Image (tube, rainbow, N blue to C red; front, top):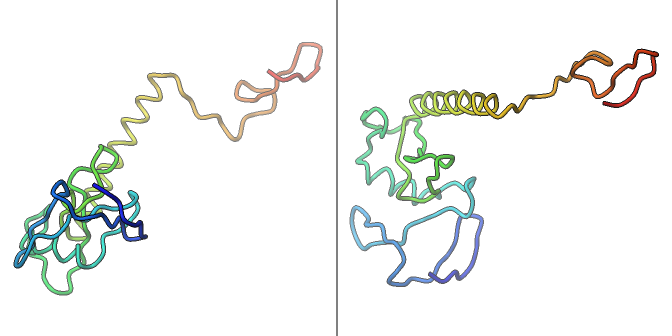
Length: 149
């Protein structure tokens, strides 16, 4: 795959036989969109293709997405779990179920990170350490002299 130019919307690549293709609901196949970075959002034309691919149904609840409903493009395999920011990894999800799912995923990930830190003995240094206490970078000798630990 040969890159022609980079834009803030993603990469423009030269059409070749190796480039992945996405079939539209009608018409010809189009080249798959993928983001330049994990933070780049898909353009409206790609959002429309994603919505049509799932027949306007929410990926999480299987409820029909109607006009005026708030929905977002949700990553099927999360970016933190190794998923890619590309069209084939996105699905439409209603906003409230998507927020609830993301919140539960983040809570579970934070709990796992906390357990891993405890297993490796990584501790957060207290901001409010007492002067010359265990958490302080200073210690006091028996003669009263304050020295660094």
